[in-house]
Image 1 (cartoon, rainbow, N blue to C red):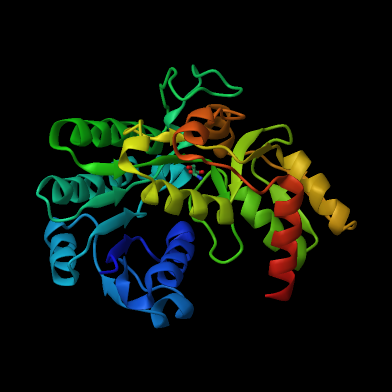
Image 2: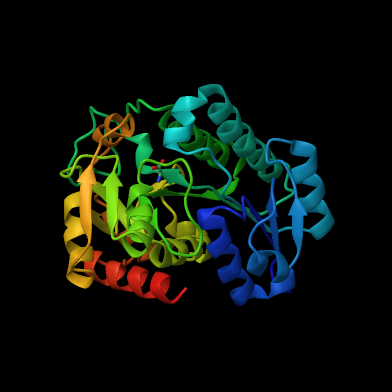
Length: 314
Ligand code: SER
């Protein structure tokens, strides 16, 4: 029998595209989308939807039992920039939602869990270039602290209770279908929308701020691949480093200019600069490549081409 999947946070930047991909793969009725709010028409009309609060264990459990869910993808979270404005809210949402799902795993009510971690687990004392899988992690944002703690819990639940939980440290994700919200890497999406609508962009980071990034297509494929990999190949039960590309605002602006010569960028760094400065510039993801054959496809130039093409015809 085909597996039943629940996506929590299905209306967000990653959740929307992940849900659509899983529906293509497993059949629309097999993939239950859920979120605290409704999503776009395509998502809402393409299969089942349940409104739920990821922090409410009873609600999450009811949906899992009702639909006989095998796999949960927990994509609900408050990101780095919003998290600094509402630290307690970010902590509660990010931790409670994870503990609810991990407990369902421990109780044998779901078989497999995907939970995303982030480059935000790293901090100013982490080696900045080619950041290794295992290294110093002293995050300075509440989002990073919640993700680092979450990683420890995932590993703990796997070791102590045999919970099959899998995780990736996503870099900044770039996509055209759904806008991100409240992240420090969001500039790399917004820049495209402004380039097309206004021909210019005011960036909230300095021109030379390098950050690890990835095109959404690669991130979704990585998510599906790690979930479908043989359990014995998953050696890291905290979370895997994952790398696609790395660039600065100046470099992405140059690449956009190649396609839109009139485009101009200006800079007005705000509080997000300090967050970006605490994160790595590039990531070493050898272990994901070795353990479950991860390979990225998109580089800066191919990503920019596709983003502009998709958004122009949208
Ligand atoms: N994209 C996230 C953020 O900027 C990092 O995981 O908060």
